[in-house]
Image 1: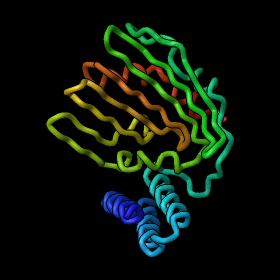
Image 2: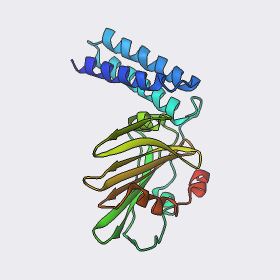
Image 3: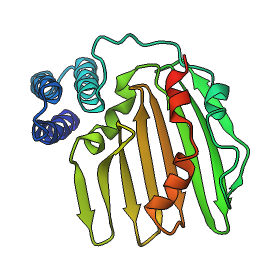
Image 4: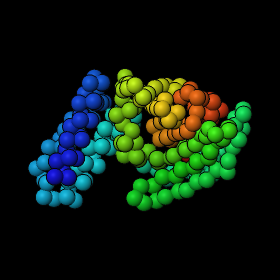
Length: 219
């Protein structure tokens, strides 16, 4: 039953990817469809099914995030380097103490985070170095698909471009919570999550002060 659910989820992602019409995305869709079929055939072998599922999502991430299929994973930079990218001051916002971590398993990655506050509103910034492990972008693949947009009475989510970098933004007008994320140099993920803010555009206040060019140059 669980395997069938995985297959259905993959097929839904195939539909989204195929609609984009780009060659690398079509290849990703083919890989995912193949993985979905294998999942159904090998429902009794959960280890093999899990492996196929991971391959499918990795293909999706590479296709939609513009990842290089030949790129080799590298050792992520120190979380202290990522902290150095975060703005020390943003007009009207009080900056908290940055935190960070670097992990080696199950995936090697490093991440830093910091919170900015203004009255009851706050913006949390996270910067992650995937070390070119595109599988880490899989959960966000659909939202990075060119032209993706979903709108309801309560808000929206849609793909965006930030200096030619793929990303997405989300807004919930009821809770006044928003998110703005961007993938830099096919490797780094910059996420901004706002709570109690006036508009999703408020997140640009922090992003505009973040040196994305310097981030892209880290090695």
